[in-house]
Length: 218
Image (cartoon, rainbow, N blue to C red):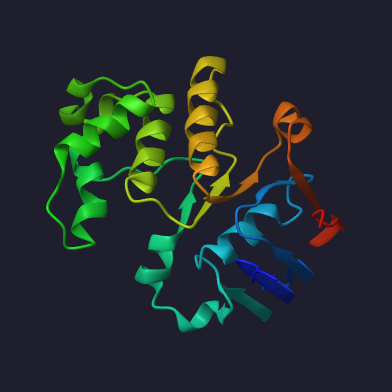
């Protein structure tokens, strides 16, 4: 039997007096396309951020590829488990600054051809490479942030409501890109409130009051 890519046992997370997650136990298989739904404040994003090592659990164990998450150096782990924020975070001054970053952290020379192909994959023009980020629309920022995360294919893509606020056309572009990575074997976990995305889910897990309400299908 194939090792699950994530094995989560007894996961809890407390923020001050607030118990956000309580006793989350789930295994997520390699290549899964898991949609995570539930009411606002139920702990969905917290769960995703723990998988991304952006938060440290209060209790429980998270294993990634059979090893405890805490045993991985965070830079190494985050190259394999890529997290996309609901509000895209861009840095530097231009789109180029953002697309150079994945190369820099791997000590590789920036590949402009690869960067331009990435922009084209989300229907952004080549001249946008040197465009100041302050001139980008919300949808353009989200697409730049997404391709920055995907310039080097991760094992896992964690998506935290990245389609929220996008227009229909941009949402379609983003969905097509994610689908192409799914088909290449990337495991995708998506937090969403979008009813159309929930209805189209291959596999659905609902979290309510910090607990799994409907476990992922086997």
